[in-house]
Image (cartoon, rainbow, N blue to C red; front, top):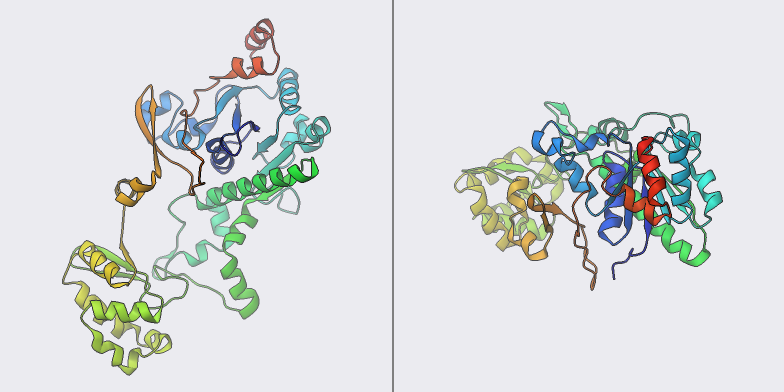
Length: 396
């Protein structure tokens, strides 16, 4: 039995942060009903894939909506609002990522729905949270990356700040929401009552930047662009050239430094006073870098990765997504799920963790737009004639 089996989730979210959160619940057994406007959410279409967009199943949409059921509703109609109220009266969780106040104006905010169902857990995801002077500000991943301090430490000194290459703040907010939902569900087991979860993308990003925040609030240290350094800024935590390709060293401890120099055939460096400790190594970084790179330039990056890993000096070549998903480690862990669909076997990333005795396999692909409208309404007690009337009135 999956952990969230029997859990009913009304998912009003769109794009990324909210769908990421509810996808985690779906993988763990929850019945997630994705409520979309009649034309479908924007993520169903993508300029990167015309064929999949025409189906309303763009790859990025599929990645976050597998295992869910799709119900289309025109929330501008009173009939649709009544449907939501009926569904919410028997639901466990509602998740939405509209701007604060939108759901309240529709009459389906937390106050209205919790009055119908005291066990309801209601999660709001927004840029800045439900309160405060910026509460109505639009939330986009790039905007939060820029505001959170993340971009101020990402990039090269020569070229300036850059955003992370994937929507990291959206994913952070989604992961935070999923954790908040799991927490509220656990508490409900003790109290019998639901509650409101207010997720701020900005605050979630700051929580993930906790070390950098503390460096400033405690020690007054203002972090700058890190380039490819680790936060420690040790000279052996950077990107180096090899005979073929680049190699990222992640050598942070004295033991790892000793292993690196020995594996490079430069154990003489260990007796050099210029490199006796991390403080002087940083002072003499150009000389140390020259010594390391001079040796690395004699072999390709992949050859060095094998040598240094075996020696106990952590490092990695730069892997593309298409390469890493074929890695033996990923295969051994079953981290990429294979799903048979009408369009052939598709592959998706799953959970980032495993539970003993729980199979969190994806059981069905992302739904076509409105694929389960009749099914969901029938489950809620609507008879076929009423469902036909709702469709004829363009409510669903």
